[in-house]
Image 1 (cartoon, helix red, strand yellow):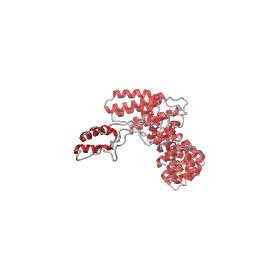
Image 2 (cartoon, rainbow, N blue to C red; image 1 turned 135 degrees about the vertical axis):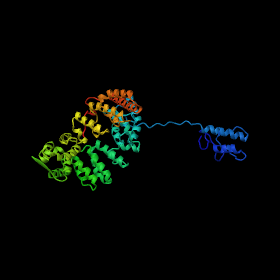
Image 3 (tube, rainbow, N blue to C red; image 1 turned 45 degrees about the vertical axis):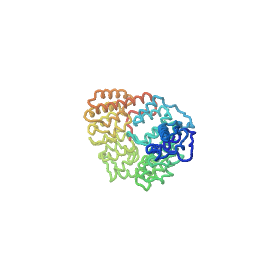
Image 4 (tube, rainbow, N blue to C red; image 1 turned 90 degrees about the vertical axis):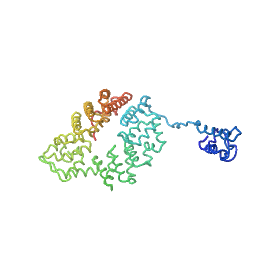
Length: 485
């Protein structure tokens, strides 16, 4: 029976006379106004609704009752499941325990990333039923994790079946689109994210694609696409970068130049070296700089100093007037990820000069001391903390004590969410116990909620570690040290 006409109750029912069957609203109107004022043709109803009573009023009421009951009846429907994929899974699927853990992590993106990376390291894949929701989640940013970052962690664990599922939806298929099919028909941000993934997996194919089709993109897009070449940058990119260094757009030229400076064979790198030679004069007793020398120094990789100036960058800092080099070498250390140069720039910088972008070059203990000193002056997340994939044990414990002191004065500490994900793997059980103890001893509701949330998230992280263990030689194991920016 349809809700509109109330005329079909059984599949085989057919009207008894020509003309439209009365709707329930027609029956109700006739019942209110009277059959004498509002006549309805009951004979046009389906056989199941034909009244038995001979009296018109009774027949009308009987029919209205049947139709009313029919409107409240839900007809059985046939459940149609998805088609069986035409592929077979070649890798083992995660255990039921890990699958249930992923459900609990759905709203916690940082821990979800950790879990997906551990699944990849274990050589396992997701069950097909879990794939659609995660593919959909890659289209949003949440919890400080971008959709592109989630996609990068998700794709390696989709498995053969998961990749087939992704190909069934136009929005999902962008993620797994092979480079041989060319650029996806998508929003600019999605095209750029797709290109980054292609570059990571197939560097040369991505470079060839960009070189052939760069003119089809606007300046802002071209700049982002060129920046993506940083992943897998090699001498084979020399000609492409030199071409982009002559682009009509300044952002594109600047981006290409910054990458080309990392490759000694590029024309841009040689121009930068020659510019530095003209801008900096190093003599045994003094250093002389021309205007624009700081920019020239920042464009040269520090390991090329012996070739260009005949002296190591660290040794040049010790020459009288070497402090003039600090700003340029600091920028070069960050740009080229040179930890040794970062270390020596900090050693020769003025006391009290805050250069947190260079702390990645310090030993862990000294770096931790600087971080804690900085937090006392400026109690918010330090960029130096985010450079560490996992914090050293000593720093993790010191930060826990510091956060407890802050929570006695503040309602929340933004650093706590980062602490949960950066505690060293080996320290997670101890950190969980500490958070649980502080939640029990908390002085107020806000204080208690903060440590209860930390306890819950640490318990989830402990479950990830317990159910997805890594071997000592696993490449996914994160070293307990700082990385380069």
